[in-house]
Image 1 (cartoon, rainbow, N blue to C red):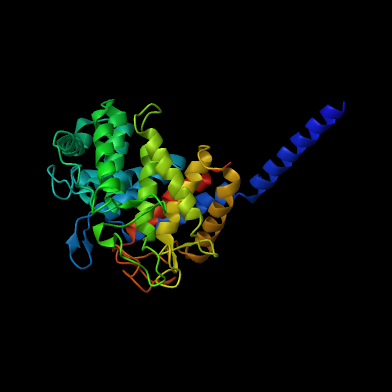
Image 2: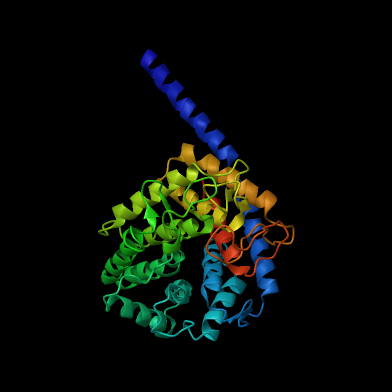
Length: 376
């Protein structure tokens, strides 16, 4: 009898903890509402999907910045399948003839990023023309010996998930193997010792940032969004490779190590700074990196990969900070760092400053929000 009472007490404590945890979660209707508004702002401002970007030079609208936006829109569509979202993606892809900026021989991952959405659209409504170009390009990668193409860590997010998706779609594990060898070269060999620092669980942006590159406080320089790209890439790859894929455990280990490192360098206000290890040197709040970290951590919680008690408070505080301090009433996102490769680029940031490209910031936010929406 005493044992039964003890068991009941334990069960009640577990239930109470579960209810308390659930009570902290944002209302899904509110999460969806803010996703709809931030996306509406972008789709109305950039209604003509065919127009190139005019910044320091003209770039077509199928470059990586727009590719990341469409990753986010696809995430929104997966939970709120509005026909206008599908049409906006399909019309964009058809305008570009399902192609890449520099054609089918490009080895530049920035050109290949659009292929992630092409493949997703193909899966909804198969047609060989939709994946012919991106498959031809990635087949070139798997049939040539080079593995050093991803010399900057952003490239991991732009190109690696394309290989993962094609491997899943075709069942051809050569895509998985090539993906691993390219990832491994960037991780372990680019520069002198690779772009990943296993001692700190974070990535240098490229070979220019290997030691002795330091912040004024003496710590290594780790750029927020750059690490966000790798973190998001691991999420997207792990979502598409099979459980028995030969290198899955290594990807999971890197994801967990990054999660631990990121947990320990978040700002007190819920955001992550532009500079992860020096809050006083361009370390102010930044939306795109924070959104990618929310994406990864919420995804890890949702799949039981990350400890809920440890990471859920971080996700919730970061999400509340984004909604409160970055999202404008009209859906515009503040505190988004412009394009670049280190903390000093695109500075100063501000709540009302429009970055040189708005698309990838919205994409990152929608990815993060889509996993917050799925929290239970």
